[in-house]
Length: 429
Image (cartoon, rainbow, N blue to C red):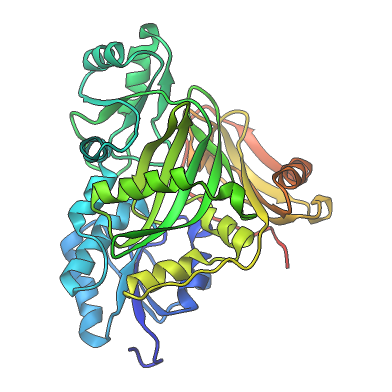
Protein backbone atom coordinates (compact mmCIF):
# COMPACT_ATOMS: atom_id res chain seq x y z
CA UNK A 1 0.00 0.00 0.00
CA UNK A 2 0.99 3.63 -0.38
CA UNK A 3 1.51 6.05 2.54
CA UNK A 4 -2.21 6.83 2.33
CA UNK A 5 -3.04 3.15 2.87
CA UNK A 6 -4.67 2.90 -0.56
CA UNK A 7 -3.56 1.03 -3.69
CA UNK A 8 -1.36 3.00 -6.11
CA UNK A 9 -2.09 2.72 -9.82
CA UNK A 10 -0.05 4.04 -12.72
CA UNK A 11 -2.16 5.82 -15.33
CA UNK A 12 -0.59 5.93 -18.79
CA UNK A 13 -1.59 9.19 -20.50
CA UNK A 14 -4.97 10.87 -20.64
CA UNK A 15 -5.39 12.50 -24.11
CA UNK A 16 -8.26 14.90 -24.80
CA UNK A 17 -8.65 15.69 -21.12
CA UNK A 18 -12.25 16.81 -21.53
CA UNK A 19 -13.24 13.43 -22.95
CA UNK A 20 -11.28 11.39 -20.43
CA UNK A 21 -10.22 13.22 -17.27
CA UNK A 22 -13.64 12.78 -15.62
CA UNK A 23 -12.68 9.10 -15.25
CA UNK A 24 -10.08 10.16 -12.71
CA UNK A 25 -12.86 10.66 -10.17
CA UNK A 26 -13.75 6.98 -10.41
CA UNK A 27 -10.12 5.90 -10.32
CA UNK A 28 -9.43 8.17 -7.36
CA UNK A 29 -12.39 6.77 -5.44
CA UNK A 30 -10.54 3.47 -4.95
CA UNK A 31 -6.82 4.20 -5.49
CA UNK A 32 -4.10 6.82 -5.56
CA UNK A 33 -2.97 7.77 -9.07
CA UNK A 34 0.50 8.38 -10.51
CA UNK A 35 0.37 9.71 -14.07
CA UNK A 36 2.89 8.77 -16.76
CA UNK A 37 2.42 11.31 -19.55
CA UNK A 38 4.20 13.21 -22.29
CA UNK A 39 3.15 16.66 -21.03
CA UNK A 40 2.46 18.41 -17.76
CA UNK A 41 -1.10 17.69 -16.57
CA UNK A 42 -3.60 20.52 -16.37
CA UNK A 43 -4.14 21.90 -12.83
CA UNK A 44 -7.58 20.27 -12.68
CA UNK A 45 -5.92 16.91 -13.36
CA UNK A 46 -2.81 17.44 -11.24
CA UNK A 47 -4.88 18.01 -8.10
CA UNK A 48 -6.22 14.46 -8.43
CA UNK A 49 -2.76 12.86 -8.61
CA UNK A 50 -0.22 11.85 -5.98
CA UNK A 51 2.53 12.41 -8.54
CA UNK A 52 3.46 12.30 -12.20
CA UNK A 53 6.39 11.51 -14.48
CA UNK A 54 7.06 13.10 -17.85
CA UNK A 55 8.03 10.47 -20.41
CA UNK A 56 7.55 9.67 -24.10
CA UNK A 57 4.68 7.21 -23.71
CA UNK A 58 5.32 5.80 -27.19
CA UNK A 59 8.92 4.89 -26.32
CA UNK A 60 8.12 1.61 -24.60
CA UNK A 61 11.57 1.01 -23.03
CA UNK A 62 11.53 4.56 -21.62
CA UNK A 63 7.92 4.16 -20.44
CA UNK A 64 8.71 0.88 -18.68
CA UNK A 65 11.81 2.42 -17.10
CA UNK A 66 9.71 5.33 -15.78
CA UNK A 67 7.23 2.87 -14.28
CA UNK A 68 10.04 0.89 -12.69
CA UNK A 69 11.47 4.07 -11.18
CA UNK A 70 8.14 4.80 -9.46
CA UNK A 71 7.84 1.16 -8.36
CA UNK A 72 11.34 1.39 -6.85
CA UNK A 73 10.12 4.08 -4.46
CA UNK A 74 6.50 3.14 -3.86
CA UNK A 75 4.48 -0.05 -4.00
CA UNK A 76 2.58 -0.07 -7.31
CA UNK A 77 -0.55 -2.18 -7.32
CA UNK A 78 -1.81 -1.76 -10.89
CA UNK A 79 -1.48 0.03 -14.21
CA UNK A 80 -4.22 1.18 -16.57
CA UNK A 81 -4.98 3.39 -19.54
CA UNK A 82 -8.05 4.21 -21.56
CA UNK A 83 -6.34 5.50 -24.71
CA UNK A 84 -6.17 3.11 -27.67
CA UNK A 85 -2.64 4.08 -28.67
CA UNK A 86 -1.25 3.59 -25.17
CA UNK A 87 -2.64 0.15 -24.44
CA UNK A 88 0.48 -1.63 -25.71
CA UNK A 89 2.77 0.37 -23.42
CA UNK A 90 0.40 -0.29 -20.53
CA UNK A 91 0.59 -4.04 -21.16
CA UNK A 92 4.40 -3.90 -21.28
CA UNK A 93 4.44 -2.14 -17.89
CA UNK A 94 2.15 -4.79 -16.40
CA UNK A 95 4.41 -7.55 -17.66
CA UNK A 96 7.60 -5.85 -16.43
CA UNK A 97 6.21 -5.15 -12.95
CA UNK A 98 4.24 -8.39 -12.58
CA UNK A 99 0.92 -6.56 -12.40
CA UNK A 100 -2.53 -7.83 -13.46
CA UNK A 101 -3.48 -7.42 -17.11
CA UNK A 102 -3.29 -9.08 -20.51
CA UNK A 103 -0.09 -9.77 -22.44
CA UNK A 104 1.17 -7.25 -25.01
CA UNK A 105 0.42 -9.75 -27.78
CA UNK A 106 -3.25 -9.86 -26.75
CA UNK A 107 -3.38 -6.07 -27.01
CA UNK A 108 -1.82 -6.24 -30.47
CA UNK A 109 -4.33 -8.91 -31.49
CA UNK A 110 -7.14 -6.51 -30.61
CA UNK A 111 -5.54 -3.37 -32.07
CA UNK A 112 -4.54 -5.02 -35.36
CA UNK A 113 -7.91 -5.50 -37.00
CA UNK A 114 -6.57 -8.11 -39.41
CA UNK A 115 -5.28 -10.21 -36.52
CA UNK A 116 -8.65 -9.73 -34.82
CA UNK A 117 -10.48 -11.02 -37.89
CA UNK A 118 -8.15 -14.03 -38.17
CA UNK A 119 -8.63 -15.03 -34.52
CA UNK A 120 -12.41 -14.60 -34.65
CA UNK A 121 -12.61 -16.62 -37.86
CA UNK A 122 -10.67 -19.53 -36.35
CA UNK A 123 -13.09 -19.57 -33.40
CA UNK A 124 -16.20 -19.21 -35.56
CA UNK A 125 -17.28 -15.91 -34.03
CA UNK A 126 -19.79 -14.14 -36.32
CA UNK A 127 -18.24 -11.19 -38.14
CA UNK A 128 -18.16 -9.55 -41.58
CA UNK A 129 -16.15 -11.18 -44.35
CA UNK A 130 -12.78 -9.41 -44.52
CA UNK A 131 -9.59 -9.31 -46.58
CA UNK A 132 -6.39 -7.31 -46.05
CA UNK A 133 -4.95 -5.59 -49.12
CA UNK A 134 -1.99 -3.43 -50.13
CA UNK A 135 -3.21 -1.73 -53.33
CA UNK A 136 -6.34 -0.39 -55.00
CA UNK A 137 -6.18 -3.28 -57.46
CA UNK A 138 -6.16 -5.82 -54.64
CA UNK A 139 -9.00 -3.92 -52.98
CA UNK A 140 -11.06 -4.12 -56.15
CA UNK A 141 -10.49 -7.87 -56.46
CA UNK A 142 -11.43 -8.38 -52.80
CA UNK A 143 -14.59 -6.29 -53.22
CA UNK A 144 -15.59 -8.40 -56.22
CA UNK A 145 -15.23 -11.55 -54.13
CA UNK A 146 -17.08 -10.15 -51.12
CA UNK A 147 -19.77 -8.29 -53.07
CA UNK A 148 -20.76 -4.63 -52.98
CA UNK A 149 -21.34 -2.60 -50.93
CA UNK A 150 -18.09 -3.01 -49.02
CA UNK A 151 -16.45 -1.12 -46.18
CA UNK A 152 -12.82 -0.03 -46.37
CA UNK A 153 -11.04 0.64 -43.08
CA UNK A 154 -7.50 1.19 -41.82
CA UNK A 155 -5.95 -1.84 -40.20
CA UNK A 156 -4.72 -0.10 -37.05
CA UNK A 157 -6.76 3.07 -36.45
CA UNK A 158 -9.89 3.84 -34.43
CA UNK A 159 -12.73 6.35 -34.02
CA UNK A 160 -13.96 5.52 -37.55
CA UNK A 161 -11.01 7.42 -39.06
CA UNK A 162 -10.54 6.47 -42.70
CA UNK A 163 -13.59 4.19 -42.71
CA UNK A 164 -15.76 4.51 -45.83
CA UNK A 165 -18.56 2.60 -47.53
CA UNK A 166 -18.05 1.90 -51.24
CA UNK A 167 -21.13 0.94 -53.23
CA UNK A 168 -19.63 0.15 -56.64
CA UNK A 169 -16.40 -0.61 -58.49
CA UNK A 170 -16.53 2.91 -59.94
CA UNK A 171 -15.90 4.40 -56.48
CA UNK A 172 -13.40 1.82 -55.27
CA UNK A 173 -10.16 3.64 -56.18
CA UNK A 174 -11.25 6.87 -54.51
CA UNK A 175 -12.42 4.98 -51.42
CA UNK A 176 -9.11 3.15 -51.20
CA UNK A 177 -7.19 6.42 -51.47
CA UNK A 178 -9.26 7.91 -48.63
CA UNK A 179 -8.59 4.96 -46.33
CA UNK A 180 -4.93 4.68 -47.25
CA UNK A 181 -4.39 8.38 -46.47
CA UNK A 182 -5.66 8.10 -42.89
CA UNK A 183 -2.66 8.36 -40.59
CA UNK A 184 -2.00 8.96 -36.89
CA UNK A 185 1.53 9.90 -35.84
CA UNK A 186 2.68 6.98 -33.64
CA UNK A 187 0.85 4.27 -35.61
CA UNK A 188 3.30 2.53 -37.97
CA UNK A 189 2.61 2.48 -41.70
CA UNK A 190 1.87 -0.97 -43.12
CA UNK A 191 2.05 -1.80 -46.81
CA UNK A 192 -0.98 -4.06 -46.28
CA UNK A 193 -2.78 -1.55 -44.12
CA UNK A 194 -6.34 -1.57 -45.54
CA UNK A 195 -9.16 -4.00 -44.86
CA UNK A 196 -11.95 -4.63 -47.36
CA UNK A 197 -15.00 -5.91 -45.52
CA UNK A 198 -18.58 -6.99 -46.06
CA UNK A 199 -21.04 -4.21 -45.25
CA UNK A 200 -23.39 -5.17 -42.42
CA UNK A 201 -26.57 -3.13 -42.20
CA UNK A 202 -28.75 -2.85 -39.14
CA UNK A 203 -28.34 -1.08 -35.81
CA UNK A 204 -24.89 -0.65 -34.29
CA UNK A 205 -24.14 -0.97 -30.58
CA UNK A 206 -21.15 -1.09 -28.30
CA UNK A 207 -20.84 -3.22 -25.18
CA UNK A 208 -18.51 -2.21 -22.35
CA UNK A 209 -17.52 -5.19 -20.22
CA UNK A 210 -15.15 -6.16 -17.45
CA UNK A 211 -13.32 -9.46 -17.72
CA UNK A 212 -11.75 -11.35 -14.84
CA UNK A 213 -10.26 -14.86 -14.94
CA UNK A 214 -11.70 -15.27 -18.43
CA UNK A 215 -15.27 -14.49 -17.33
CA UNK A 216 -17.06 -11.68 -19.15
CA UNK A 217 -19.38 -9.32 -17.26
CA UNK A 218 -21.20 -6.72 -19.42
CA UNK A 219 -21.57 -3.31 -17.79
CA UNK A 220 -23.73 -1.42 -20.27
CA UNK A 221 -24.71 -1.26 -23.92
CA UNK A 222 -24.65 1.94 -25.99
CA UNK A 223 -26.59 2.45 -29.19
CA UNK A 224 -24.50 4.38 -31.68
CA UNK A 225 -25.62 7.08 -34.12
CA UNK A 226 -23.47 7.63 -37.20
CA UNK A 227 -23.62 10.29 -39.89
CA UNK A 228 -21.98 11.87 -42.91
CA UNK A 229 -22.28 8.87 -45.27
CA UNK A 230 -20.42 7.25 -46.93
CA UNK A 231 -18.30 7.79 -43.80
CA UNK A 232 -19.18 6.34 -40.41
CA UNK A 233 -18.71 9.35 -38.19
CA UNK A 234 -19.87 8.68 -34.62
CA UNK A 235 -22.27 11.53 -33.92
CA UNK A 236 -23.86 10.26 -30.72
CA UNK A 237 -24.53 7.43 -28.27
CA UNK A 238 -27.43 6.38 -26.05
CA UNK A 239 -27.18 4.17 -22.96
CA UNK A 240 -30.48 2.77 -21.71
CA UNK A 241 -30.21 1.54 -18.14
CA UNK A 242 -33.82 0.52 -17.67
CA UNK A 243 -33.21 -3.23 -17.68
CA UNK A 244 -34.60 -6.11 -19.73
CA UNK A 245 -34.63 -4.39 -23.10
CA UNK A 246 -30.85 -3.98 -22.94
CA UNK A 247 -30.18 -7.47 -21.56
CA UNK A 248 -29.70 -9.45 -24.80
CA UNK A 249 -28.30 -12.93 -24.05
CA UNK A 250 -27.26 -13.52 -27.67
CA UNK A 251 -25.42 -10.21 -27.79
CA UNK A 252 -23.55 -11.04 -24.62
CA UNK A 253 -22.80 -14.58 -25.87
CA UNK A 254 -21.12 -13.17 -28.98
CA UNK A 255 -19.12 -10.65 -26.92
CA UNK A 256 -17.93 -13.43 -24.62
CA UNK A 257 -16.97 -15.61 -27.59
CA UNK A 258 -14.93 -12.74 -29.05
CA UNK A 259 -12.99 -12.35 -25.79
CA UNK A 260 -12.26 -16.06 -25.69
CA UNK A 261 -11.13 -16.11 -29.32
CA UNK A 262 -8.71 -13.25 -28.72
CA UNK A 263 -7.39 -14.58 -25.44
CA UNK A 264 -8.60 -11.52 -23.56
CA UNK A 265 -9.04 -12.70 -19.97
CA UNK A 266 -8.43 -9.68 -17.72
CA UNK A 267 -9.43 -6.03 -18.04
CA UNK A 268 -11.94 -3.74 -19.70
CA UNK A 269 -13.23 -4.00 -23.25
CA UNK A 270 -15.36 -1.96 -25.63
CA UNK A 271 -16.81 -4.26 -28.31
CA UNK A 272 -18.66 -2.81 -31.31
CA UNK A 273 -21.26 -4.91 -33.14
CA UNK A 274 -23.94 -4.62 -35.80
CA UNK A 275 -27.17 -6.55 -35.99
CA UNK A 276 -27.47 -8.41 -39.29
CA UNK A 277 -30.61 -10.27 -40.35
CA UNK A 278 -29.17 -13.51 -38.98
CA UNK A 279 -27.78 -12.12 -35.74
CA UNK A 280 -24.99 -10.04 -34.23
CA UNK A 281 -21.67 -9.53 -36.04
CA UNK A 282 -18.51 -8.29 -34.31
CA UNK A 283 -17.16 -5.12 -35.93
CA UNK A 284 -14.17 -4.61 -33.64
CA UNK A 285 -12.85 -5.34 -30.16
CA UNK A 286 -11.10 -2.58 -28.21
CA UNK A 287 -9.14 -3.57 -25.09
CA UNK A 288 -10.08 -0.44 -23.14
CA UNK A 289 -12.99 1.55 -21.78
CA UNK A 290 -15.30 3.09 -24.36
CA UNK A 291 -14.62 6.62 -25.55
CA UNK A 292 -16.92 9.49 -26.51
CA UNK A 293 -18.14 9.86 -22.90
CA UNK A 294 -19.78 6.41 -22.99
CA UNK A 295 -18.60 5.58 -19.43
CA UNK A 296 -20.15 8.87 -18.28
CA UNK A 297 -23.42 7.91 -19.96
CA UNK A 298 -23.25 4.48 -18.36
CA UNK A 299 -22.85 5.98 -14.90
CA UNK A 300 -25.69 8.46 -15.44
CA UNK A 301 -27.99 5.69 -16.68
CA UNK A 302 -27.07 2.89 -14.27
CA UNK A 303 -25.05 4.40 -11.45
CA UNK A 304 -22.09 2.12 -12.26
CA UNK A 305 -18.72 3.88 -12.30
CA UNK A 306 -16.65 2.21 -15.02
CA UNK A 307 -13.52 4.09 -13.95
CA UNK A 308 -13.70 2.51 -10.51
CA UNK A 309 -14.38 -0.92 -12.02
CA UNK A 310 -11.36 -0.60 -14.31
CA UNK A 311 -9.15 0.42 -11.38
CA UNK A 312 -10.17 -2.50 -9.21
CA UNK A 313 -9.42 -4.87 -12.09
CA UNK A 314 -6.04 -3.23 -12.65
CA UNK A 315 -5.24 -3.92 -9.00
CA UNK A 316 -6.27 -7.58 -9.30
CA UNK A 317 -9.43 -7.09 -7.27
CA UNK A 318 -12.92 -8.30 -8.18
CA UNK A 319 -15.43 -5.48 -8.73
CA UNK A 320 -19.04 -5.77 -7.64
CA UNK A 321 -20.79 -3.15 -9.78
CA UNK A 322 -24.49 -2.94 -8.97
CA UNK A 323 -26.81 -0.59 -10.86
CA UNK A 324 -28.72 1.70 -8.54
CA UNK A 325 -30.91 3.42 -11.13
CA UNK A 326 -32.58 2.79 -14.48
CA UNK A 327 -32.49 5.92 -16.63
CA UNK A 328 -31.44 6.85 -20.17
CA UNK A 329 -28.41 9.00 -21.01
CA UNK A 330 -27.34 10.32 -24.41
CA UNK A 331 -24.58 12.40 -25.93
CA UNK A 332 -24.68 14.31 -29.22
CA UNK A 333 -21.69 15.88 -31.01
CA UNK A 334 -22.05 19.03 -33.09
CA UNK A 335 -20.10 19.68 -36.30
CA UNK A 336 -19.71 22.77 -38.49
CA UNK A 337 -21.25 22.83 -41.96
CA UNK A 338 -17.86 23.49 -43.58
CA UNK A 339 -14.17 23.84 -42.61
CA UNK A 340 -13.72 26.89 -40.41
CA UNK A 341 -11.38 28.59 -37.97
CA UNK A 342 -12.93 28.76 -34.52
CA UNK A 343 -13.20 32.10 -32.78
CA UNK A 344 -15.28 30.90 -29.84
CA UNK A 345 -18.16 28.62 -28.88
CA UNK A 346 -20.89 30.17 -26.74
CA UNK A 347 -23.34 28.25 -24.59
CA UNK A 348 -26.38 30.07 -23.22
CA UNK A 349 -27.41 28.23 -20.02
CA UNK A 350 -30.73 30.07 -19.92
CA UNK A 351 -31.78 28.44 -23.19
CA UNK A 352 -30.93 24.89 -22.11
CA UNK A 353 -33.95 22.70 -21.32
CA UNK A 354 -34.35 20.47 -18.31
CA UNK A 355 -32.53 17.20 -18.74
CA UNK A 356 -29.31 18.66 -20.14
CA UNK A 357 -26.45 17.63 -17.85
CA UNK A 358 -23.52 18.91 -19.91
CA UNK A 359 -23.15 21.42 -22.73
CA UNK A 360 -19.68 22.49 -23.74
CA UNK A 361 -17.55 23.81 -26.56
CA UNK A 362 -14.60 21.67 -27.64
CA UNK A 363 -11.92 23.40 -29.77
CA UNK A 364 -9.55 26.09 -28.63
CA UNK A 365 -9.78 29.48 -30.35
CA UNK A 366 -7.82 29.52 -33.59
CA UNK A 367 -8.28 25.79 -34.26
CA UNK A 368 -9.49 24.81 -37.72
CA UNK A 369 -12.23 22.19 -37.66
CA UNK A 370 -14.26 20.46 -40.34
CA UNK A 371 -16.97 17.88 -40.85
CA UNK A 372 -15.96 14.59 -42.50
CA UNK A 373 -14.11 13.65 -44.54
CA UNK A 374 -11.45 16.21 -43.54
CA UNK A 375 -12.38 16.13 -39.86
CA UNK A 376 -13.53 13.34 -37.62
CA UNK A 377 -13.42 13.37 -33.82
CA UNK A 378 -11.41 16.60 -33.98
CA UNK A 379 -14.01 18.17 -36.27
CA UNK A 380 -16.57 18.62 -33.49
CA UNK A 381 -17.25 22.05 -32.02
CA UNK A 382 -19.49 21.07 -29.09
CA UNK A 383 -21.17 18.25 -27.24
CA UNK A 384 -24.48 17.96 -25.43
CA UNK A 385 -25.41 15.32 -22.86
CA UNK A 386 -28.94 14.62 -21.68
CA UNK A 387 -30.48 12.33 -19.05
CA UNK A 388 -34.14 11.33 -19.04
CA UNK A 389 -36.51 8.49 -18.27
CA UNK A 390 -36.80 7.53 -21.95
CA UNK A 391 -34.77 7.69 -25.17
CA UNK A 392 -37.42 10.01 -26.59
CA UNK A 393 -36.97 12.36 -23.64
CA UNK A 394 -33.22 12.52 -24.27
CA UNK A 395 -33.73 13.18 -27.98
CA UNK A 396 -36.20 15.99 -27.27
CA UNK A 397 -33.85 17.64 -24.78
CA UNK A 398 -30.90 17.43 -27.19
CA UNK A 399 -32.98 18.90 -30.03
CA UNK A 400 -34.13 21.77 -27.84
CA UNK A 401 -30.63 22.44 -26.52
CA UNK A 402 -28.85 22.63 -29.85
CA UNK A 403 -29.82 26.27 -30.59
CA UNK A 404 -28.30 27.30 -27.25
CA UNK A 405 -24.82 26.43 -28.54
CA UNK A 406 -23.43 28.93 -31.07
CA UNK A 407 -20.22 28.51 -33.04
CA UNK A 408 -18.46 31.76 -33.97
CA UNK A 409 -15.99 31.03 -36.74
CA UNK A 410 -14.55 32.07 -40.09
CA UNK A 411 -14.87 29.80 -43.10
CA UNK A 412 -11.59 28.19 -44.10
CA UNK A 413 -10.43 25.74 -46.76
CA UNK A 414 -7.35 24.34 -45.05
CA UNK A 415 -6.50 21.13 -43.24
CA UNK A 416 -8.05 20.65 -39.83
CA UNK A 417 -6.15 21.05 -36.60
CA UNK A 418 -6.30 18.65 -33.68
CA UNK A 419 -5.90 20.95 -30.68
CA UNK A 420 -8.80 20.54 -28.30
CA UNK A 421 -9.49 21.97 -24.92
CA UNK A 422 -12.74 21.41 -23.11
CA UNK A 423 -13.97 24.48 -21.32
CA UNK A 424 -17.00 23.31 -19.36
CA UNK A 425 -19.46 26.05 -20.28
CA UNK A 426 -22.37 24.30 -18.57
CA UNK A 427 -22.36 21.39 -16.17
CA UNK A 428 -25.56 20.79 -14.27
CA UNK A 429 -25.00 21.25 -10.52
